[in-house]
Length: 62
Length: 517
Image (tube, rainbow over all chains, first blue to last red):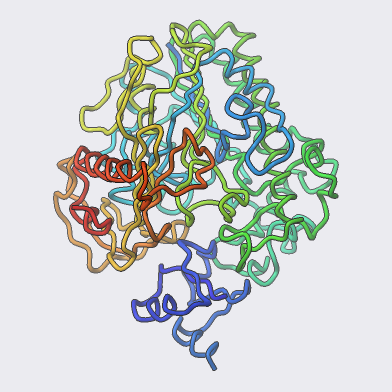
């Protein structure tokens, strides 16, 4: 499962994530400090970071 | 008249015997002897609802009388607010705040404590930016409250759970034999009892005690830690600070064993706070304060412990576990003391009720309606609707029996209105400039110009949810879309929601994002 919050997502990546069956949008994932600093997604309960949300997603899909 | 307003954060009303024999989802009773004792003495409100959620929005309802969630999220008091303590000061009332609630001191939440004549801030709870040593905090406390991958103790970013372990260690809460009197709820309530004794020579006062317990982390001393579980409560494998979210998926997933433990520690905190609340009652007795003091006990919201498949709050629909809050009020001249009050009341009404009890002026432009007439026995009804919810998500309404949870279209952004460039989300990190903000006289309840900018909406429920809480208090059967007897109720509640939004002169965009005419 990929968990994400919309705070810093661009619209396109949000739509891309929402279209997936293995994703879940959360109001806040309680990682505001990390969210303030860098792009992240929570994948199967583990924080994954990268240069952008799209890049993390691309990396996951690869 | 004095007023003691006591909030116990996240206190679920179903954990109190005054409301329910045993809590939802638990097969054991939870000891709340002192809250029960107070409930027998006070008026017990059966249909009291939160307004704006979660923590700081609830406090702005209490302290400014504003139903803010239609206009903005978690944030500061605004320049155009009339803070309750300031209104009280204007009528020569001594004001004091006692709290361990770190949110008052976080980024973007100013304006809540500055107007009191005095305040106690007891340090160390939750994310309180207090202790920075030792670099490697107590291992057991850390493992029960965080994990090394997500919140590494050496990480220097904002919002890191490891701070709790350091703070707790500094307070001597790290050992299994730690004294309960050093824990947060006991310190806040002991200080309140002490304050009551120290201020008997003031003519009138307003004391606001805001206990962060029973909010998570659910870290309890003995005997409470073992009171409702056979587990070893110091087992590092058992968390006392769960993540919010679905109980069965993602980072918030809990095993049945973990969930049982979390529930037991929440229950333990409730009993701990109850026992120390007894000291406040004792102080009121000892200093003969009951005849001159209105005592209000309430909470800002609840906390889901697996009900409806969720842990925590914020993201799930605003079920009654979260929104229907406890309220007990003792009034020296109250005609309803010792009785149940079934009239519908809202958190925002506490602002006007407290001010009126203090003989202070209630500003005309607030959303708050005093329910002193209920307490005086001069009225049996108070309001036809109560609105509640989170900014940027569903908007919910109740008539006291039915609850109607209206979802938003997540594709339609929500406007945020504030004199500050507050973060619409990410509350506890520095604000960022909102370069697309417009300034103008946008609010119906003030002439002050504010910024207006938009941010993403989030969905709490996909379809409207309608519950008959008289027949279905656990809100298991959604009646919305039901072709049977409830079909008319869905239409009626949707119309009631529109009436409520109209009455508050809600932003036009709210109707659009909620799909309302």
